[in-house]
Image (tube, rainbow, N blue to C red; front, top):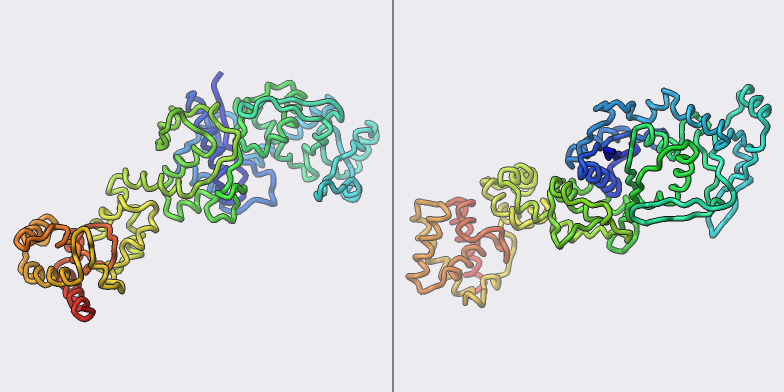
Length: 484
C-alpha cells in the first residue's frame, strides 16, 4: 500500500513552527517510503481566515523545499483540495446523512438559550455537555422541523457509557471513557462541516494512510475513530507529535517573536537551517549527528523515533545551527543573502563582497553583521589601553612607535593587496625585531578601534584602501600622542 500523507492547514496567518513541523514530518514520512505528500486547505472556519494566508502557505512550503505532489494547484485525482470547494459538491452533508441513517448521528434543533442552560463550571472553566435532547425526537418531529426551515446542526451520536480505545504510533494505546466524548457537532448551522468531521471525511476519501498532527488532538482522536468505525472505514495510522515549548518550558506562543517561519527568516535565519532545527524538535536520529539536509532527513527519518516528551525551542542551538549553515554556504550565495544587511549597515565606499567573505564564518544570523562592520563607517571611541596586548608584548608606547614606523612604509607601498601588504609588514617586523602579531595589532586597532574584527590588519587595509587606511593610522598616532 502506498503511503499518502497530507498537510492540511487553515489559512489563518503565518505558519507557526508547530505547523511547519507537522508539514515536515508528514512530508518525511511519505518521502521516506516513496509515498505522496498532499496539500489540502481547510477553510471551513470562515471567520478565522486571514487574507493572504493561502499565499503564505504556498510560499513557506516552497522556501522550505516541502514540495507537495497533490494540492489545489496540482490535481492528483482526489480534488477539490480546498474544503470550501469540496463543500459545494455536497460531500459532507451526504456523509452526515449516511450517519443519521445508521443511527450514528442526529439532527439537533436546540437554540442558543437552551444550549446555554446546559453550561456548567468545572475547575474554573465553563463547559457544555449536550444532553442528547434531540436524539429522542420522533422521525415526524424531525421532518416537521426541517420542513418549517428550523435551524439545525447535525451531531455525532456517541455512547454515554463504556470506553473507546485508539492506537497512536507514539503514545501507544489510549482508552477514554465515552462519557467524556460528548456528541460533537458534525455539520454547523451554516451548513459548513466542523473541522473534526471534514477531517475524517476528507482523509478517507483522499486515501490518506498516515495522519500527523500535534498531541493537542489526542483527546479528539476517539471521536475520529468512532466516525471511522461508524462508516466502516479503515482507521489511518496516527502520529501525534509532542508539544513545543520555550526555554521556560511554557508552550511556544505567537507572542514569543520567533514562533513562525516568517519571524525566523526576518530575524536572519536561513530556511534550510530552520528546517533542520524543526526536524529535531521532537525527533532524534540514530547517533549524535545534528546537521542534515532535507534529502538526508528523508533518508534518515523514522517516525517511531519521535518523542513523547515536550520539545524545547532552544534559540541558542538554532543560532549555532544557522551559523554552521552559513559557514558551509557557497560564497556567492552567502553574499546574495548578506548584501541587504551589508548595505544597511555600511555607508562607506568599500568592497562589500570582500567584507562578506570576512564575516561569513563569524556570524550566526545576518543581523550579527552590524556589530562586526560598524567600524567601516567610522572608528568608534576607544581607550588607548586597547593597544596593550600582553601575549604580543605591545603597549601604547610600542604601538605608537610601530604606527610611526609603518606610515612611511605604507605611503611608499604601491601594491595594496592583502598578500603584498602582509609580506611588507612582516619584513618590517623582522627588521625591527618584532613578532608579526606585534606589528599587526596596533594597525588593526587604529583601523577599527575594536578588540575584535572580522579580519586581520592587512585584510582591513586592503578593503579600506590606501587613502582611508593612512588617514586612520594617522588618527591613531594622534590619539596615542595626546593620551600619552
